[in-house]
Image 1 (cartoon, one colour):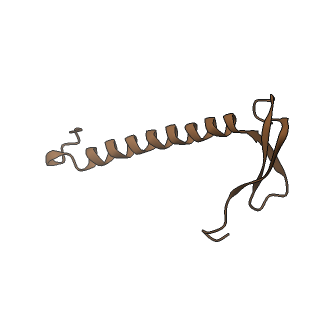
Image 2 (cartoon, helix red, strand yellow):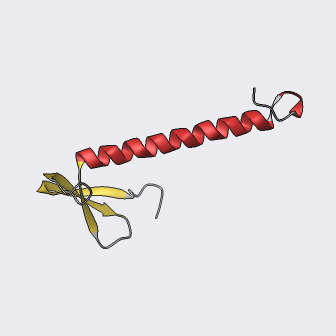
Length: 81
């Protein structure tokens, strides 16, 4: 897959049941590149997944910053700045 191909795409949207929250909502049929099956997800659940990715990414970024500060600490004493 090239970097220009989309990994996730919304094929269509219609009233249905979300496969994540199992509630009756407008759902998008989500296609994943390279997979034959599609999933159904509502915008609320997709938003919650995006928030989770952001939260986990922020935690990784914070951890990387602490490790970098530890490695490059003053005098190489291993203490955080």
